[in-house]
Image 1 (cartoon, one colour):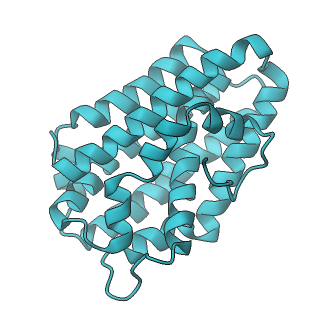
Image 2: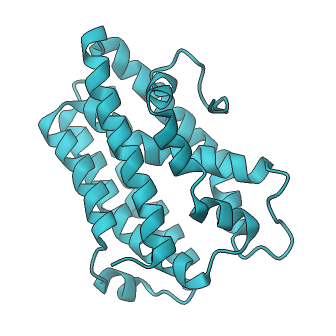
Length: 231
């Protein structure tokens, strides 16, 4: 059984989706990459490879939220998506670049890298679901990343076997366990429920669960990519 979420009530759409793919969710959030982050044993080459691909991932993530502006029906939803785009481009990208510099990765070097297959697979899947479907389809495809990272950070920060002293990945854990990111995760949970109140039917849930499951599998594959230095 999956643990309770620190961000969502059991009757939220997010929790229903998470419960629909418990095995895939566990494989993603308890992946060897994640466990090695907590233990501080992840090879540095694997972490640098992940960081560089995550930079490319964030570029497409911003594109996905730009698509959310177009797919929105209300000004409130448009403004929420636009604020996320601004945050990604003007804040998150800079923070990521600054963090990566501490690992010997320059922005120019990362921008020049080819995308790994796992990076292309998930980012293009999210964009495809957004193009083919509506704003709810798009947000469901984004949810395993946005909310999942918050759950992973929270779990690592509170796990008794997480190494704190001398763990080179402690700052990464603290970033995704911190209140600022907790607010992001909770906001994503709430946005799903707002959209569900407008658009979700019993008949539609199964299709959304397929999207959520596939996105979760692609997130686990992103960890595989980093751990195994896959191109």
